[in-house]
Structures are given as structure tokens and as C-alpha cells.
Image (cartoon, rainbow, N blue to C red):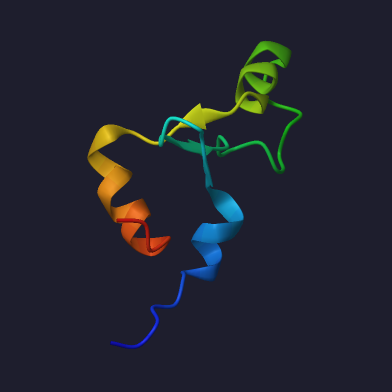
Length: 65
């Protein structure tokens, strides 16, 4: 069986934690920041985890079984 290619968009956006969860960054933090409150921008800076429902599809993109 040939080697599977990793989705290059996914490998730039997701990282795996030591316990096997997938870390991600929040959206809406790149531009049009003047109308967003300081609190909102501060909370968007923190990393989040991929939801359990989406974990399988992200793992498939990263070729993790």
C-alpha cells in the first residue's frame, strides 16, 4: 500500500498534545480588530481543543490512526 499524504493545510493548523488531543487556534483574530473588544481579542489568543465530533476527520487529514 502506498504512503498516504498529509493534508498540508491541516498540518499547519493543528498540533497533537501528549495525551492525544488536538490543539487548534481560534478564528476571527487576523483582521478587522478595531470593532472587537479587548476581552474578546484576549480570549481568541488562547488555544483551544478540537471538538470530539470533529476529531476523527482532523486525524484522517493528519493520517493518525
